[in-house]
Amino acid sequence: MSLEIGTNVVAPTDHVARAADAAEARRRLRTSSLPLYVALANLLRSEIQEGRWAAGAQLPTLDQLSDAYGVARVTIRQALGMLADDGLIDRRQGKGTFVASGMPERKIIHLDSDWHNFLQMLDGNVPEPLAVDPDAAPPRILPKEGVPAASYRYMRRVHRAGGQAYCVIDVYLANSCYRRAPDAFDSEMVIPVLGRVCGPELKKMSQSFRIMAADLVVARHLDLPVGAPVGEVRRVITDHDGMVIYLGAGQYRGDLVVFNTTLEVPTG
Figure (cartoon, rainbow, N blue to C red):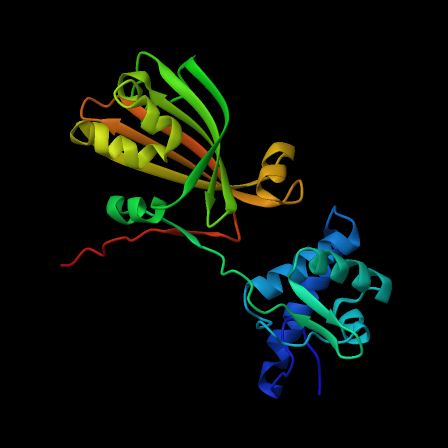
């Protein structure tokens, strides 16, 4: 039986693709700024969480993993030790190493361009406050985004779903809306409350997306290595007069978020 990255049995027709995956994995390990065993642990964690090794499946041996990833056995042991500490694998004396059974399913965050689907995604999510400024200076607003409100309430938060932190976000909310339901805005997800309290006044929400590197604060709160790729979503909600009621810039874990956009194809 041959071994390739992320699988136990490889059909002959899959060898080219698997070899490319193995080469890419080795390249990522060589170019990572993290300690080698940490980078390898992150790579193996992704293999498990993405379902390439099913719950209860036996992992390859130390020698097989060493050959597949091109690293020493001691590096494999260190990486597996991190996964064991995280509860992702079980080591069974005399039997081998297995993917843990009964791992909680990760909730994938779907960032839809549709307002109603977006609100549905936020249902049940929990904000954790980090910082507040009740009378913040207006944020930087691009001319195409709208005009600033008279004053804003600034909130930095961690958003969680199913206990998993998936986003660190900076929110600017117009105080004219905040004052209508301060307790709700302070304790709940801001956008659903905004829809309930100021809904008839809102006209549109725009979103932009870019990839960036996690800084120390974001990495700590999202349980990521410093410099890991995160997706920044900038979200702006305006009223019928073009005033920016809400501006949020959130940095999302890339492995937990799917950004969905639908474009209508013109006919005729």
